[in-house]
Image (cartoon, rainbow, N blue to C red; front, side):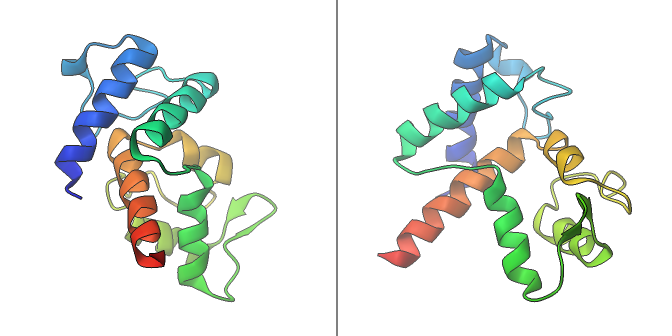
Length: 134
């Protein structure tokens, strides 16, 4: 599935969930800082996307994919992402400004960096996982 197709659906879902005009919802808009999404909005957005695509979405899927890439190398320690985890996130979440992904980044802060593009990638990741299982 093309990211542009997913973006259109994600844009519609965000618009209906928080009332933000579609023209203000861009791929590089961060969910929390730029769009003002809160945790309850995010739950609603994920639910609507799950319904649209008939998949289960979790923000933790990003972490799961990074952990899978790392194998036996620790991803985080006491909530702080390890240097190897940071490198893996930079590679997988290349839509995020790399200046934001640096030593000392916590798991909680990583979620705050999620953009519309990150959400689109999450949908595509889950769809690809389902197709590979079929």
